[in-house]
Figure (cartoon, helix red, strand yellow):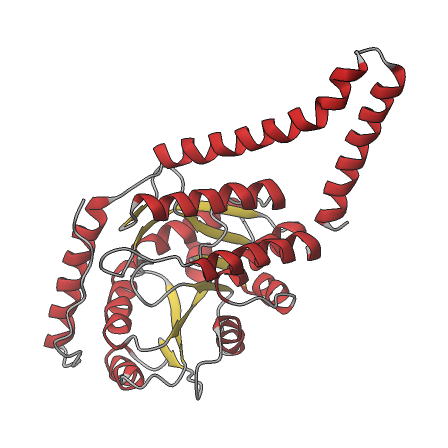
Length: 241
Length: 97
């Protein structure tokens, strides 16, 4: 098991936009928690005006250009295309996708890797909604909409996972390449589409509990337009997957 | 097979069973006519129940924001001693329970 672990390489794709401070923190934490693992971090920055790319270059000087890859784009072009762009430069056998804002904590990376090695799963997805996981920073209204959305999605789509909109995932590289080609949605519906399509294609999906600290101080607002987008996304997924 | 086709076939099967019940009149017809309404109402109640249970059992982790603040302090310390200038922007995390 230890030998397999040493032979595998993990590419961590982190899309960024104005994450000058967070990207440095997250890189430090990744290196802290993945000491004996062969990995590379691919930062896909969409032309951040706050100097994110300068910080990444400083991090490259500190940790090595072979460990941190900066693959920037000219402007904000969306999450799905950011992953595709990062994938082109990934040299690992596995790809991890995570957010740059520290809502996804790198300390869970070893548990993702371990779960995949134990089960040989094609996808390991983090779930906030099981025992051992959790969310901090949500008020009752937010929890209500989250839970309501979840029950609705489960009734309509019968997905194989408990957390549909989560975006902290580990994929076998070939699986990500296969699934991402058939996804066209935007935002968090994109994350749902990825996992539902993967379920439909019969890929082996496992879950690990993760904790999620909402980075916005105060409440995370979910407006009426987001709810409409979500419902439209659900109907789209119902009809096309 | 697409998922929606699976659901539609299920609904079709249930409808066929319902119509058969109507024709066969084993159960009084007045009751059989109301079955779809019972079904929809039960589904609604089940959904509300699942939402309620989910909210009551919603896992929270207030200690995580404290741990995260520690991690951030540790990271900032390391980065400044290694010459990475991340400025004096402070990251606020919700430490209220």
